[in-house]
Amino acid sequence: MMVVEVKGIKPSLNKELHRHDTLISLHKDDIDTAQHAIELFISHHFVPRMCLIDKLFKVLFNGIDYTGSFYQNLRIYDATEFDINLLLKVPYMEVHQERTSHFSVPDGFAVCSTTTQYGDMNKELIKYCKSDKQLGWILKPKKILSWFESVVSKTKNYFSKNPIIIKGKQIKITNCIRNGPAIKLSLEQNPSWLFEIDLVPALVHKTTLLVAKPRRKISHVWRLSFPYKEKFILQNEEYAKEVIRLLKCMLQSNSELQSVLCSYHLNTVVMLELRKENNWPQSKIGFYFIKSLCSLEGYLTNSFLPFVFNRNFGLFDGKKKKCIVV
Image (cartoon, rainbow, N blue to C red; front, side, top):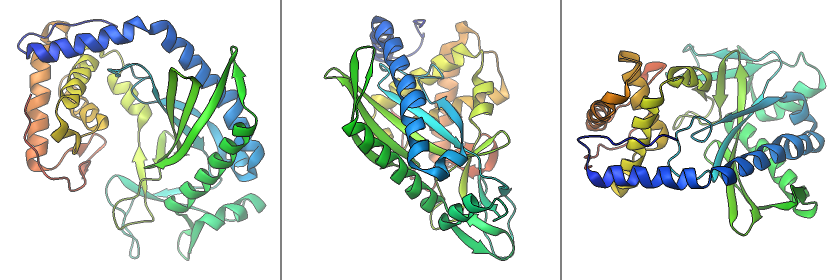
């Protein structure tokens, strides 16, 4: 992890960034060990047990996608949180982004439907769907998420009675709760190693993922997600990532902004800037930090931050504007 002195920025912010760099670099071996233990536990134990516990999950499961700040090299703290998409491929699934005469489909969202052609398993799946004369069976995000949560909970209960030992250390699941479109697992490998894993059930449609994060008052739509395209935008943009980390440090030092912003908002601001101009040089990190900060202030003032892949969809979802104080 490189350490960059950003000219023109408050010394306190540079000091905070350097402190995070030092924390991360000091514990690199521990982080690598933890990452290996987490991935081994999820891929070789937890997910296979989910397949054994629930036949529908076994049929739909299509792979594991490791994502989030840790895997994009955007974290500013030690790795204690991991984001993992569990990919689900629904047979004969169709994705509808167009508005119809009887369905409202907001920008940035889609309706997912399927048929009963797949036999018994799709008949099992329609328990979590709504019948529609035009589209067949519409997959309901909240119902699918509740089903997924029950599978994760049953699997958690199994490992509570049958703990796994990895590299001589026992993995203990201490909690399992819903966290937005994810189910959060709290893991403990020893009293000083505490981890949280967000397991997100994500429907797969070509290169697009759909997650159970419906828009307010519209319960039938799935949120469109493009993690692979986002990774491509940030690929080889190490100094743009440094700007994101600076913005995260700023966010951590401003409690008022934390009520409005999250890490993904900051990622989006920088990705929007990269769409205008890419290949940021190290010598201009300070310039691009200020430029991104000014853009963020504009988005907050207008209460609208456009989604990178659909400028008509705003990520703030009605949040009130705030002032930025760095």
